[in-house]
Image 1 (cartoon, rainbow, N blue to C red):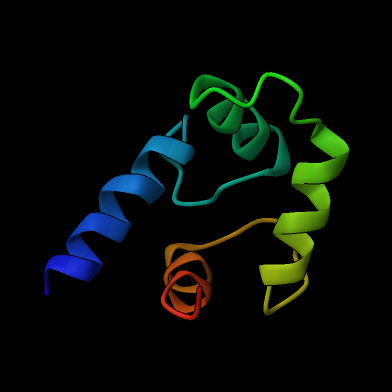
Image 2: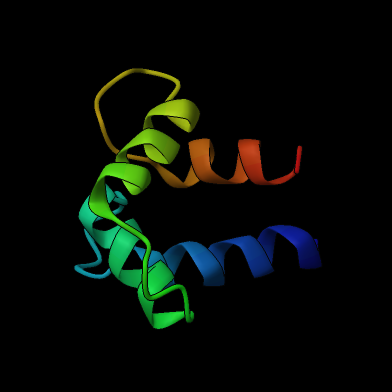
Length: 71
């Protein structure tokens, strides 16, 4: 279960306001903090949309973890 625990910790870092969803802006901000200073909101939006199973424009933990385990 270490995989899901690690994924939850990572998700929580991306979910900056703690509402249970990762928006493209939150995703971009987290990536910049991780060192990718040129990561744009547009790129983050494309990544979020590619993993967003229900099309609501944000990632839930389930969407985040389901796709993360495939990487």
